[in-house]
Image 1 (cartoon, helix red, strand yellow):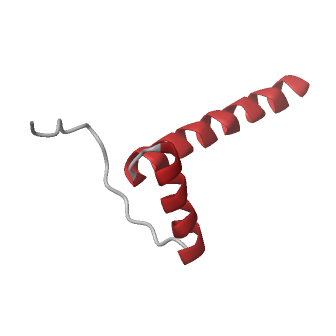
Image 2 (tube, helix red, strand yellow):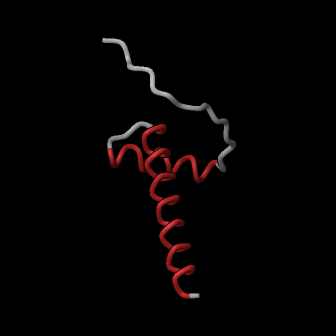
Image 3 (cartoon, helix red, strand yellow):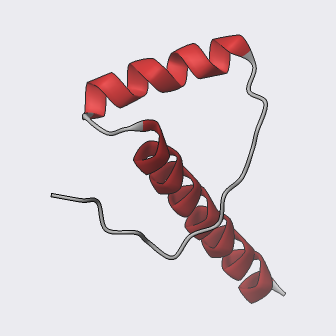
Length: 60
C-alpha cells in the first residue's frame, strides 16, 4: 500500500553527532521514525513555548 503524501515542507538540518545518536535511541525507545519524532518534539516545544509566553503576558 503506497504512503499517503502529507502537506509538508522539507527542511535540512545539521545535527551534532551526539544529538543524532540520542535521537536514534529515542526513536527506538518510542517506536517512531525520525520524522515523526522530530515533528512531535517540535510540536511539544512550540506549545510549551506558547504556554510560557501566555503566562508571562498574564503577569503584566
